[in-house]
Amino acid sequence: MLTLKGEHINLRALEPEDLEFVYEIENDETIWEISNTIAPFSRFTIKQYLENSHKDIFEVKQLRLVIAAKSNKALGLIDIFDFDFLNRRAGVGILIKDSKNRQKGYGSEALHLLIAYCKTHLNLHQLYCNVSEDNQVSLKLFQKLGFKVVGLKKDWNHVKGAFKNEYLLQHIFN
Image (cartoon, rainbow, N blue to C red):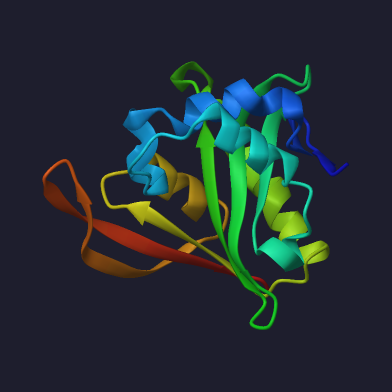
């Protein structure tokens, strides 16, 4: 089982016990904009996803980890997606579920651990992320950890009847 240990949080593999946690996140319409979700997920579908979450990142091109407190309580999720071994790059997404746990450093520590994992264990050359122009908290988080804005995608996402711009950020390892 993969566990990356930090000072205040750990990143760990998904477990069957995470079903309700993941179900609540995937079905929270207030965050669908972040994940480009347009329909709810059933518990059955999420259960199947959890049963297959052990598959190798080289096979499925993604990895989802739980951001867990030292007590092992799930706080959020951090994802590697679009894993491209040939070009040594991947996308990153992060979410702290409850607003009361946001802006306490958990996301920053989780992203720091993931960046180190991607460099050391996956031998990636770069990571990228997409952040809505109006999501200043996420923009600051990624920039604080070395991501640079490399572009602005105009009218990229259609959200609640309006188009929104989205930043593309990259973190290139030295």
